Length: 169
Image 1: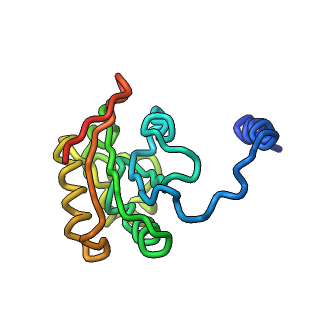
Image 2: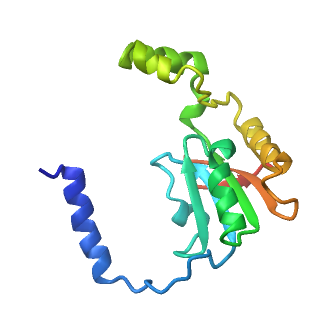
C-alpha cells in the first residue's frame, strides 16, 4: 500500500509530466558547473541559486560537505565536463549544532550497540563555525589532487532567513 508521500509523488509527477518538454537536454550540464549544498529542506537550489534545468549538477548532502561530495565532483568534472564548483553552506545548519561525540551517543541510545559499532569510525563532519566550515571545505577541494587546479572553486553562505547568498571565499 502506498504511503501519502508516495501518492503525492505519483500525483505531482503526473502534473509535471503533462507539461514536460525538456526530454532532449544533453547529459553534461549546459553551464559546466557543479553546486555542493546542504540537503536542508528549506533550500530550493534551483530557485535560490538561479539554476535552470540542465544547467548544473547539484550535489546535496548534510552540511554541503566537500568530502562527501568528492566522488560526485570527480564524475562531474572528469566524465561530464564541469569546470567550476560553487560550495554553498547555510545559516541555521543542523551541522552547527552537534559534535561527533553527541551524534555517536544519540545513535547508540536510539539504535543500540550494534548500530553504534557499525558506525563507530564514522566522522559526521560537524562544524561549529559556518564561515570557517566554508573556508575549510574550499581549501580541501583546492588541495585535492582529484580536483584539477584549473577548476574554479568558490565558497558561499546562503541565509535561510532572508534568501540572500554571500561569498566567503
